[in-house]
Picture (cartoon, rainbow, N blue to C red):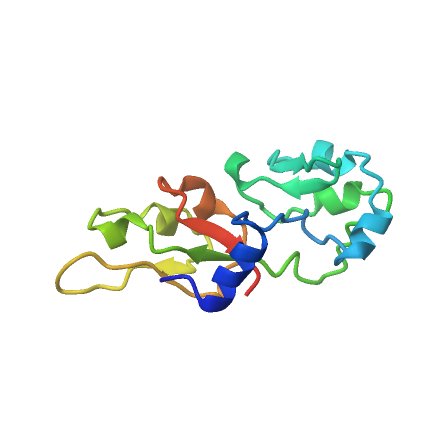
Amino acid sequence: MGMSHKQGRRALLLGGRTLEIRPPWALVGEEFFKKCSCCRQCLEGCPEKILATDRFGYPLVDFRAGECTFCGICAASCPAGALVNEGQEPWRHKAHIAGSCLNARSTLCRTCAEECESRAISYPWQEEGFALPLLELERCTGCGACLRVCPVQAITMILP
């Protein structure tokens, strides 16, 4: 499950940082920044407490705090219209499992699959050695449950 050339370039262009993920249903690009008033209502409304702010005060998701349940409260709390839940997907972000996964280092770990409610991560049976995680992107919701529990931070969120 190595990093593709495209993903490696994106990380390089971002200075090795992971993408900042705005709250679910955030408007795309500059439209979000034009509308968001940095009022923090989405942060206060989030029952999972996974929303934080960037250095400019704009909300972003911090999966270290937990996973997103896509409850919609953040969008309903936004008075500025920067988060708009009109039945569309909350975001396009998907999990990516790097080669630093413990199973790639001959250490048994299945924590990510155990936490994945959508069953997007599995470990195919193999006769010898350690199975590497298989991630089905079409099933991945980008909730972050797997990212939060990975003991070696081998999981990040990307835009496929």
